[in-house]
Image 1 (cartoon, rainbow, N blue to C red):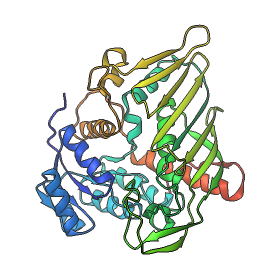
Image 2: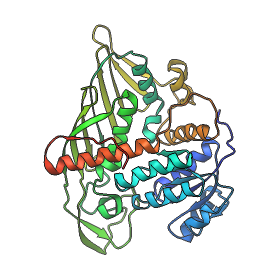
Image 3: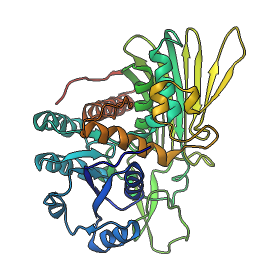
Image 4: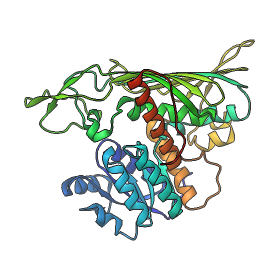
Length: 388
């Protein structure tokens, strides 16, 4: 059962992911005190929809609310650094959507600021909180797979398949110079590194922009909303971010990996998949079937482990709140991440999987910069480790 937390939250952002945070917080037992949209009407509309007391008129108003101890940032990428820094300086904990900032200089400064303030500072890499993914981590930690040989996988979508599909994320000025890799590829990279305990040491990347020109509607398009109606008022916009990419990975212990990422694969709405090959066993998982872990064996029959708290390792079972046969999916990963974060904030001792920290968010940006550099120069690039 969820506990009722004493910490109260405020959420910045009312687009696709903001309401996901609100719902996940409410389900986790956290009171959402207020919400801030891009304008007053969006703040009020979202507050009414979720039964939230306050609809803030500005970010400063939110930070001045003494009843709020944690701020969730789901605003566009370009605002993350400024808002996260201001939140920490105001004495509030912060949970920020990825990417943590627009570049490693900014993210490095946020790491330092989090250390100086001593506040909890997390990044919302929620995929690692599928119970089966926690189970895979526990199996590897306990030595069930033996030495890891290699990791392969993909994260594929189709919501930007057409040249008339448009969103602020396709513009480097809004989301940063990497798009498909930074937007969804980093979820896969965080997932496999958190599961295996391995760090990517070097990368060789090939990136592809399928639509160098897209048609932008006069108004914005919400993430994953699609084009329900074909807008009349369109104009051409040159695109300087990638639609897909293929990345060879070399981990610190010499292990190898391959990642394919795409936002233009027809029919793939949101599929993240990995296969981890070990000396004793292999593991395979696909988010389309989130409650199933395929376990490969050499000398005996392969297995499919279905998510059931009674069958999972202790820590994985902590993140499985329904009996076997009652599916847990995407929204539940947010709830489980928030439980981990707020238990840490309030000092509770339950052995939840650790939430992704600003240090890990900074590391992901360093990794993205290495990927971009590799694609530009068409060679292997080592991933830097320092904090700028």
